[in-house]
Length: 176
Image (cartoon, rainbow, N blue to C red; front, side):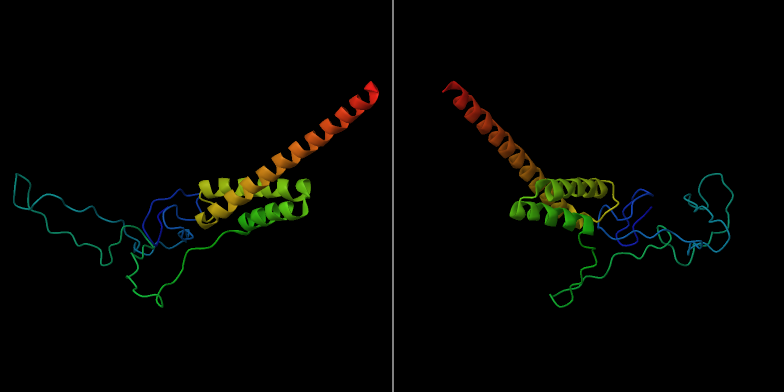
């Protein structure tokens, strides 16, 4: 499937262009450029040269585009006032991942916030890699995943340290 904005070739299962992050539109029932008759191949030989009989020139289609629905590159816009942001932002899954991971730092509820934040971040990074989510959320998803991972590891080490202190205290009490 081709992007209607930049013309990049994407997989048919992609929902966003891998090049410009534009949401991909699936071609509908009408293809736009075809008018019911099959397109004739263009002649690449020069008429009158060689031993081939001269054929009448074939007509090119009126609106020739590389594929149906191609809109071409947008005209350049100069200045800050004319800038438009057509790329979609981060998905809700990426934002939820970061928010849950940050909440786990503040409130310390690791298993209820850091682990789900880490899982959501990994799911979003996989979806971005497969072209099913906008690439704009990649940094947010990575931050949510890694913050959740660090908080989970540090909490696990703190629990192990606390258990070790309990055993050391019991061992010191039994020696006396």
